[in-house]
Length: 443
Ligand code: HEM
Image (cartoon, rainbow, N blue to C red; front, side, top):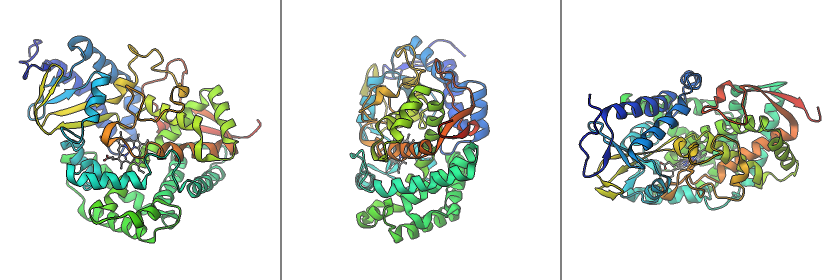
């Protein structure tokens, strides 16, 4: 194999085969191994042990040092992929959707098609309009405080109270996640879905197949039964849950069950982020004191500092590391033309943890997000940006901050493991390994 750059494609900087293999091995492979749709705890542990998340960022820094800010084309046969290495360029691409940079990339479509083939993210531009609008309305994307917040805060508080009771002195991921899933089912589908663990299990089964995208046959029977269950929960339109809004906002083309399948799926990284944020707070006593002070205020609808902690946790540990686009036509860009059908990779950790550009890249600094819409702090894209930006970018921090506040009102939270050195946080924070001691307040 030659170390010479391969023949440039219409002027684009094109990586050598060796560099292409290095990016595939050090950036794509660990992301795929951890599980793009549902995490595989053993793979996460291996990635943590081998420090592969930090190495992925270093690999892309090396690529930028060698080729410039790109885009750099990886000449993968049948699927050329352009890697974006400049924050402004990443923003411009995200803004330019769904055409010519479509969020409905082949990979995403193959993966999400296992359980939500009509979700807005993987819909054609025409279908997407109504589905995106539906999501924006149900999730009230422009509002920092959702109109159903008061009832939802009560649901969160009840579940966290029960969690604290059941945990005793130690809280593990499994205990937390079981409560989190109850919060998710109640806030999305209503109190009538609180005990429907089978629904969450079906979704997990479908997501496990989705991890393999094209490589796994679809589980049509499980998917049908999962969608039927969602529809019957939605039909109750339980008061105070998103189902209440959906009952009167549902039109024919919105494919509500598919959008809701996405909500249930996407809440899972919300749980990971909440648990990680708790770990980061416990490792930063000053921030923890501010959070506890805010939590004691009594109104959980707008916990500004805790919300900033959630978004900062997502900057450090983005749960959608690979933001994918696909060109729908030939596109002129810096350095050349991206041909129609080219994949585009915006690797969020590269921008979020680029210590050559941000001196505090590896530190926990929630203040930097205070009062800022999580969509608008370049070059950070925890919730993506542009027309496909996460419509739950306020909703998720609202629920997650309320869960932490509820916990901090009941217990002092001490992180038993892993060690989190505040001066340089690790590339991976393995939520499955986190364990907390819950102590009575005032100790
Ligand atoms: C930590 C939690 C979450 C993170 C980090 C997150 C992040 C993202 C990102 C990065 C995208 C855009 C992907 C792209 O540009 O290709 C997205 C889209 C989306 N998210 Fe979230 N999300 C989270 C939770 C949620 C939740 C809980 C919901 C619903 C209750 C939700 C609803 C959506 C929807 C409907 C879309 C598709 C938007 C569209 O098609 O235009 N997300 N999310």
